[in-house]
Length: 479
Image (cartoon, rainbow, N blue to C red):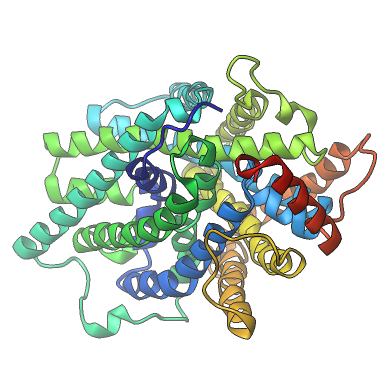
């Protein structure tokens, strides 16, 4: 990768661009006023401990493998391969889900209606433009990360400000009594969207893969994760307020909730058109920024025999992981072709079906980070730490266990039907899809390991000490 060009401001903007997901604001707002409780609760119980775990791991174990490397070192090749698969497969599903938003939003702005084939052509164009953007080197794409962050924040601020203006002029669209701000654990539909809040707080490890392009990664990564995380939480709260001010909770569309909220407040004005266009631009920036981290992890895993060899193909000129990048495009394109199946549920729910599976697989991969963190602390205690998780002993274990449990519970309520209502039974296609991809991942794991001479079972205290001594001999630039 190229020379170190990222300043601390670049890093902060990179965190916002990678982590803040504009299309996820509407599903989170669908929780209702209780979203404010859940945002604050999960900032404290998930974001802060998760961010500190990632900050320690990212500055202690510096490699292109990121999350995959941490799990592999702690738990061995089997779990390393699994986490690489879960972490990767979420991304093409996410690209495909974002692609489904394009034709409708273009239609909102222009009044045009597209045939099935016209819709598919627009969606595929988005997918392959993202693939093309992902061939650029990270250090040469700071403008994508910075620009994407600024535009995302601008959208959120505009939606929040519109909400204040609209509520002042017309009253709130929802009941704003104090009781509505408390969580209702019996509201299964609202709990389904809790995974979106957790999803909105993930992605900080992508920033650690930019370490070689940063001026001072040891200090910048921890500060960026904490400050960026708190900033992102505030942005989501403000944006969610704007959506909830304009649209009754029961009517918030998880696909286009933000767009419909702006349309309700601003009408078909130039402002509405501008917000729509900027929203679409941010989707390109978000996909491009995530592709850097995801593709490098898949590439790195392939070199260990933990992902298929095609993922390890790199550009000879730029050293970018173009193999993984092209496979992203192929898988996303195949997912979009599901719309050609003449089943109303697929065509009506394609965004949420793909997006929810994307969310689930990303969250599954994060579950493994927490036991990996605890094990690495145990078997590699002498490794120097630039940033150290501030709790020790039983307190550390509790602080690490809580976000892991939250991930498990959120996955269950997202894809497992909890009763026989229509909304809950609609989760079955997502549950089936997740099971099929998990099984496919096991096939891929075994297939990828063919020809591997020895299975890596993870670090031992002895191996950790040897590695530390070798790094010390090579000098600080190799640590």
